[in-house]
Image (cartoon, rainbow over all chains, first blue to last red; front, side, top):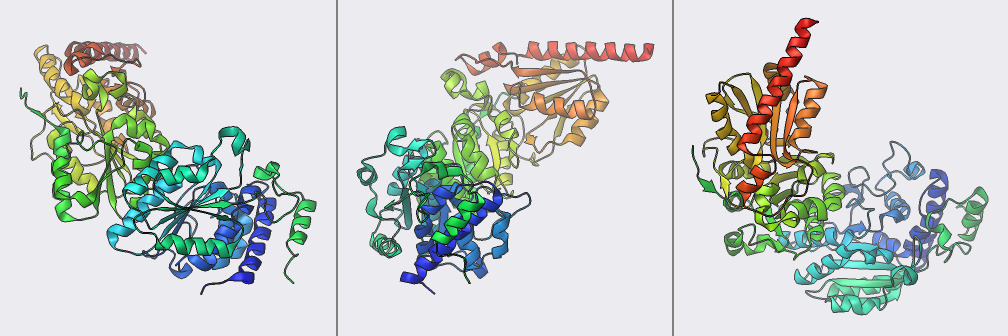
Length: 275
Length: 325
């Protein structure tokens, strides 16, 4: 069943609350980078992707690689809310013995399609999966979410070249373009602009959207699916810390644990706890 | 002594061609290394099963991890150092950590493999690097016949594996009938228990030649081939160390991290005996002719003889001391 419109934004609120509670409870984690991809995750898991939580390893499922693996709290939240594992497990993030490792581990977390966390690698791995799907004659799609800072890694562009060569039109990459990375602004550290022409020159089908608008994200994916013989990139303009006003655009939230008071405020800003 | 030279690279591709007939799940991933892997015939026959990602080893390994996670068995074939150094992290985090069925085939192993190319293409750290990663199996077939057998063995072995190959000019040691069992050492010659000589890879040939010289000097050695550097057949190694009481290791690899370290670790933990490690003595070699390089970097027949004598003197000294006590 696909979910649309207001219902998706309600789910997005729930995921944001989960992220804040998980990081607070773990005493560690990356809330800012998680919040900037909430709508991308929601659009994928609650509308776009052809998956079945009852059969997590179904061969012809769509796949997602969270190349910016540090944003995993929001992915874990989505997986739990889809029914891949119990919601209670979210409290165990980053704890010893947990199925929710500090960065995604495909061997221990149901629904994680590939291990990630060391930046730059997702497209390369996703390309392998996309080519595998074609070899098997399957019609599934492989989605990859990368950060913007991680586009500074060389392997990104190695994979970008190869994806064009292999005509991987079943590979769709979202760039979470929130313009901030661990140490400051992307512009200061190693600028990416002009970003879209870079991808275009590598032979990719390119789109640019508001990454916090699920309807636009869903439309962009529909358009990407009509493209033949070309991989697709959707550059998503996003805000780090989106949805919680005191966190938006404040890079100190790249890796920071909310205090009890900050958590309370954040939950209130997101409409409070469900009654 | 047999001086036949046959290519480990060609033996690998011969086995791959046969595997391709058996199943479409075996794929070959190259990084502009198709010619170096001698894989043109493979590409001609199975164009849809060869993926050349260009000079981009990190991507070759990441791409292969994606293929493997979808049920294929990719063989990544390129230069040993570019797999183990350039793509080191991709091997560790995306192949070894998830335990994926990716086969890493590294050519130009050692100075013998790299010879005239110089340091950039002589790879003598590969085994040390990979041995420190959990979950990877490492094999070093000693010649073309063994490479053919090893390729067949690793194709049915579930999990990440690294196989070290050479330049294509390796001396034949084994017959076509000799088998290859992953994880087991093999006693090749057992002239006596004066000393054990452990060898790994293409240097086995010169070790076998040298034990004949030793025999003529009334030094009777046991020669053991260690073609699997991980997992280590510790029990069998320990029992040989116990029998011989001293040992020499010979490998075309830095003496740090490879066979010398393997045997030292087993010895220290199980059977402490005098040990002399031959191989690259933690230096960067020069270009040159393969045999000349081995001779000049501590792996000559003379070096092996001297090492054996050194180990035996230490053993004798220890025996005398223990009698005195």
